[in-house]
Image (cartoon, rainbow, N blue to C red):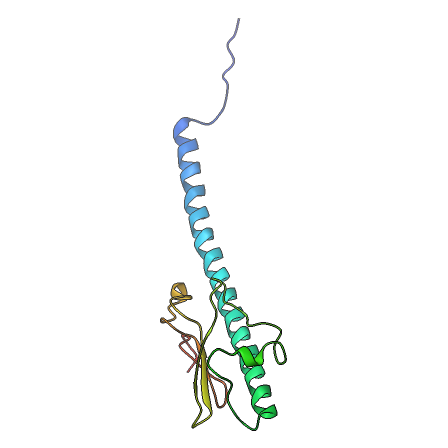
Length: 137
């Protein structure tokens, strides 16, 4: 009887292949996480813009008066409910009655993976200036 050689992969070849696949999976996971964070930042900016529109509509209807710091006066007449960021935290709101300037900000280190500082990005009136985002001045 003749013995046939069984061809297959050696243990070393399998380990190298699994190692390469693990490295590629780690790279992919980092990129996916970064894309998720950028999506959360975009949603955050959109939410802040919607809150500012509600504040502006409130000011038009109330003789240019800024709403109180709790923003209860803009719900539900100007915005259905106050949105929260991707970590389920309400946005911060600062206002100055004298100058009618207000700021809406995302609290804490909500976007640290994207090198956005704490309590940023910020939406500042007048003009809707966005600050705290790399590349945006």
